[in-house]
Image (cartoon, rainbow, N blue to C red; front, side, top):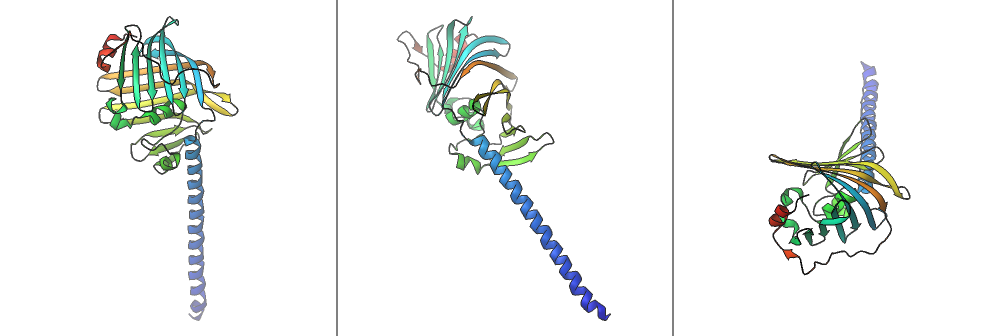
Amino acid sequence: MRSLRYILPVLIAALLLGGCRSQSALRKQKAKEEQESARIIHTLLEAPPVQELTASLSLNLSGTKVSGQLRMRRGRSIQISASMLGLVEVARIEFLPDMVIVMDKFHNLYSVCHYADIPYRNELGLDFEVVQAFLWNRIFAPGSANPANAATRLRLDRTDEQGRSYIRDIEYGYEFVANADGRLESLNRSGSGYIFHMDYSDFTALSGKWKYPLGLNFQVKVSNTDVNVQARMSSVSTDNKTWPDRTQVTRRMKQVSLDELLDNLDL
């Protein structure tokens, strides 16, 4: 029994030491995971190394195929146009920091609206920064244009066996999936009565090691409506070119409501 006087303190010390070592290992592992999570999120929030991108588009709008063009200047303008037979521009949509302009050049109509007027804007948090992130293949936190502020709302939920990272915006519920190379592969958002999904594919080097997806698939399901837009890019350039941030409306064009314009526009 006397030996217990010496054995018990040793056992207790061993247990305490083992527990401390275990907790220390867990803390180190957690810190390592948090550091890796922060690195991945920072990489995907970081602005592309180029200010401008232009490309020819091949568009499939729920079965209707048209050609077009994409023009983007970070922080300033996004323009997407559609052409008839690849020659005559018939429609254009411009996303500017404070408004959206839609043009039906075939019928000489145009409409100006604000992001607050876009259907499901509140659910999706749509504004210029969010639309810009969609098309520049970046992650985002709606309402947080500053990457440092956005990072506080983004969480790395998990990684899978293929090395994909699943990142979630804790306020709006967007889920971003990054591939093993650290590039945004898809994003998802679903809620009451709607599903929003976007896939990126065919990443191609455009500027040094920076890669951009030449394939984009956008899908929205609302009630009984299923809109699917597939875009394929070619002739992509990151050179600075001469084109206006905002297209000037001609005197022949008439301003109408967005609903009336869309009723007339037939792509």
